[in-house]
Length: 261
View 1 (tube, rainbow, N blue to C red):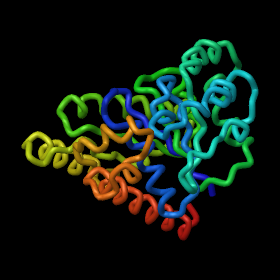
View 2: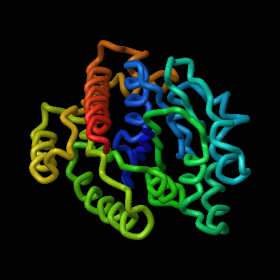
View 3: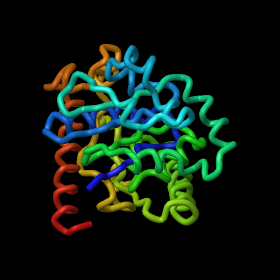
View 4: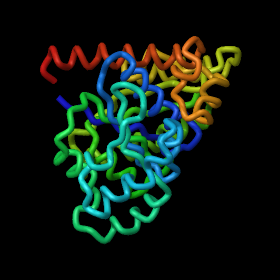
């Protein structure tokens, strides 16, 4: 069973790449083989795992445009069970080139389907906008994980994102479901964070993960060292938040396997 999860939000600065890197790393630490596809031309997931040099010869642009097979660009990150399909700024050009192809929205889906790779979880770190790349990712995914910053404007952006997900599901990918909403950058000292958490849980119920990611300096510092937070400071609140999220994922996945979903 292969679960493909797009980590996406049209709003930038909500902890999307931070979640992609650190959730992947925590699952890998727990013994689960994970592939992280960096599908953002900024390449922040690639640099966040210290893999910039590896991306020079292997990157997702080649997979989309040069007909290279996905397994041919997958690299080892140096962390057991964690693998990466890197990205570079070249991926920006792929958005224009994809538009010239038939069924351009299905390119990534076909590449993943063709790849004989053994990963229970494949995460796709999407760009912070609705581009041809994001549409490709949502068409390739079984589900979408939505990081949501604990601020008022994030709630407004969530409404637009859910409209996009609904349209993709209706027109392009009927299998697409919402994996869950992850509350990020939470500061329990402020009433605003508490209000946002309360509103989101009241409206979306079980779709909201129990784990909440705090606003923590370590999460901002770790990428500068090319490390996930559990390797940078495993005792930090940020590391604890993502380890709790990984535990939720494993429990959900185990239940799905039991139920045959």
